[in-house]
Image 1 (cartoon, one colour):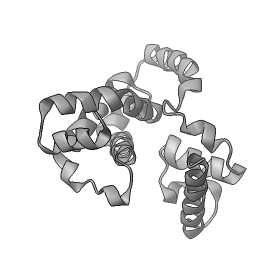
Image 2: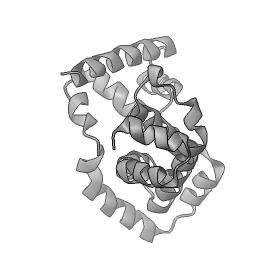
Image 3: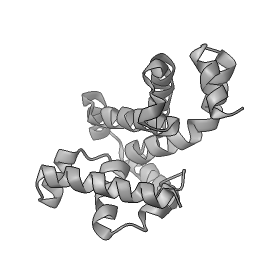
Image 4: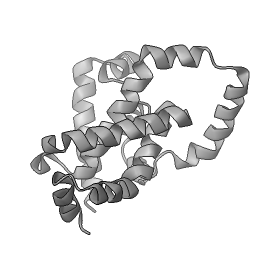
Length: 176
């Protein structure tokens, strides 16, 4: 089934199509979410919430504004960032026992080379160093543009311009 056929079935609220959608994209979305949150249970919760949002908001997807995968990836990424910023998540992280920290260290050493399950990181490595740093902070580490501005000590407008230019460079690389 092509993506267009799948979307047509999902627009009709076909449960089988939704299952197929989940099977196609769950691993990729989970990889992005887990990279940001670094907690299995929380990442699974965010993944579930992501698919609920996709299901409920499919009418807001506009094909002329971008690819479907990019749209759902942004939903997943934004959900993970929202979870990271939530008070409950932050309070739970403060109350972790030392056993959990060993688990996190073990997991991070195994997943360090699997940061990006869709392979985009290989393309990012081909960009200029300032773009690599900017994309790493904004997209892989979940910083806001304001946080990047403060971290790199550059004006917010510069961050926005560089982000747009770097994303355009990345788009050009992906067309190859």
